View 1 (tube, rainbow, N blue to C red):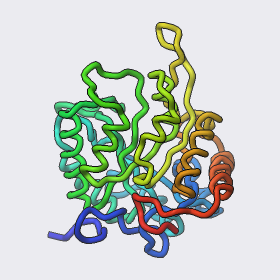
View 2: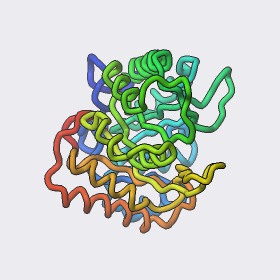
View 3: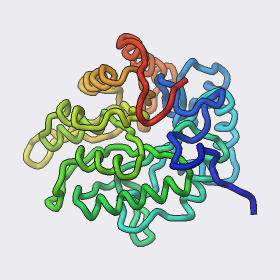
Length: 312
């Protein structure tokens, strides 16, 4: 039987999947964008000066077809971040082994510089809900999430990044803050943090918390990638502001301000500009990524980040 173990660093789960142009482990400390089907031919013909592309793993869990054809060609010239949306890390049941096998095959095939997933659950009893649902922050959930992450990292042979969620409700059963929960997960599992700055702003606004204080309470030295995105504005039944993590608009100025605080602390860090709805022209996304790169450049020289080794 052929060995399909992803080629990562030996021993304890590696800092990142082996990959990146020139064999450099870890994403380049630049801005990247999501690779969208409507842009792929333009990407191949123009080879834009972009740090990396990110794709959702579940869109590539087949053996062949046009998505694989084009991703293989893009991967020849660009670093790749693989972002999962279906492992249900926060679910009651352990990660699905068939799903992990498909992820391992993707990592072996494309050698991405990073793999990430969400602190959320999306399946139960064999039913997939096509959503990222919240978890209570208590000891039972903490133990379960850590077990699941340990299994993922063991099977993939790579250190994963865990993304902080965007939430719209909180559980009465919670006995710790989100930042404390995340900090303990990272300490116990050795995984890294995918810091979604938009999610942080959305959640703090929805729950009446100070986003800057929460940012400072996170273990930022564990950040291996940052996500920036847009949100939609609504209000709850009481008329209070309710932000929706829609990924359908440009990054809000409040999120840019939080991002400035992140790079003030970390220097240049791999940063993805997310747009999954109302996707504009490639040039518009590249311009938004350019703003992130300008902000990183204005903050001085990059510094070593805890979730990856030296970046490109």
